[in-house]
Length: 198
Ligand code: ITT
Image 1 (tube, rainbow, N blue to C red):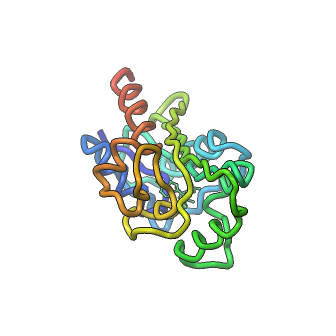
Image 2 (cartoon, rainbow, N blue to C red):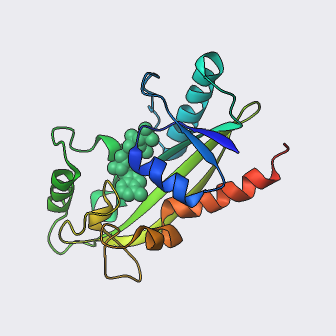
């Protein structure tokens, strides 16, 4: 299967290629437009990106694809009323590295507060023709006290999944792929894709 990935996030592209090795992913081209994500919910944004990318690809795409996949995801921290959540990508825009963004995020959580957090991922798949659908996944965990480990991307170094003592930044990708929000969503996507008419 050939799927256009409507994302500029290199960490996501790497993870999708590892989680769905049977799919050939075409990355969103560098000269393609920025995909708007103006919704209030992960699901709205995932659908907006998948449908926007499909429309652009139909007019400008260089090769046919079976469908278009978009991912809207983020880290939801209970002590921050679920933030940064759907705004995870735009959190702390004045800071350029995730080491600094993570440090600011940790500093926003008051001492003694509940550190429960979860990663959420909503995937929208728009087939070449027909209606798009979404699937989702989540992983429960807690916020670390420091930025730990350099693996993964984004907020991985400050998130400890339940049942582990290490952050996603410290755990090997193979472990992240057995329990992550994106892994759960990919399993649901694979099940849906196998039921689609060819
Ligand atoms: P695209 O919209 O181009 O896909 P993006 O980075 O803007 O890329 P989102 O709007 O979905 O993607 O923002 C999600 C942010 O949440 C992302 O930039 C990371 O900071 C964070 N995030 C999502 N999944 C993550 C993961 O598995 N590990 C660490 N951080 C993650």
